[in-house]
Length: 284
Ligand SMILES: NC(=O)c1ccc[n+]([C@@H]2O[C@H](COP(=O)([O-])OP(=O)(O)OC[C@H]3O[C@@H](n4cnc5c(N)ncnc54)[C@H](OP(=O)(O)O)[C@@H]3O)[C@@H](O)[C@H]2O)c1
Image (cartoon, rainbow, N blue to C red):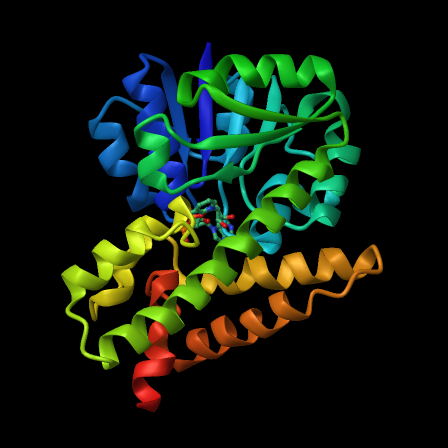
């Protein structure tokens, strides 16, 4: 059973690599063709077009930047990919509205499966997929997703719920990183050395385990991580907009969103989300 991966950024490449490591036949496509080369060296087959990839695979995983990218690739002219042979599994982080449109157009052939976790977590089998869609499509998707991770969180047949949960998770992550940035900046400025501060922060029960891998990234000056500020700002905007459509205000999320948008506009767009700490350092 061939699996296609559309979109070979940090996350799509990790998905393809994990599937290759599991012995799967993998077909890859990316808008900028050079990005497929390393994966071809590792055993993947490069498709010349989205349609070619879609026709040859029983499951098509999608990992693209945002709503606009997903709509351009998965719903060209508002219609499904021509000649799709199997199930489309969108792992991108997008709005519930886009997920709903994908589900409406692909019907029984669509699954939303956004990812909780970094590309490294995908590579090591430790990521979580939040899975929603029609039961028959979900059962086909699960056979492939379970090669990538054993942790599949099913939310039922309303695919958009998977996107809602993913956005809420990321809002919490971004709020946590922004809060930890305050603490690290204040701790460093107060004279704690980094090793002592890190030791303390990893022992404190109020610092969530999911933030531990950001402590080094907050402390150093490069912030060369795996989840860029531009994507973090996107997810906060989507979380806030999704809540607004159901009549809920998220003032804390909105404040943190402003911080990431400011960071993105201040030359930090491609730094890891830990780079938000630079807003504090530059002020000092
Ligand atoms: N990185 C993480 O830690 C992480 C964690 C969980 C979820 N996610 C989500 O996973 C998705 C992918 O993230 P990533 O980290 O892989 O991002 P990325 O490294 O920036 O890669 C983005 C991918 O989208 C493609 N793309 C963008 N606009 C496009 C368009 N209009 N048409 C066709 N392709 C387009 C890019 O193609 P080109 O190469 O041609 O630019 C590239 O393949 C996002 O929704 C992100 O929020 C990321």
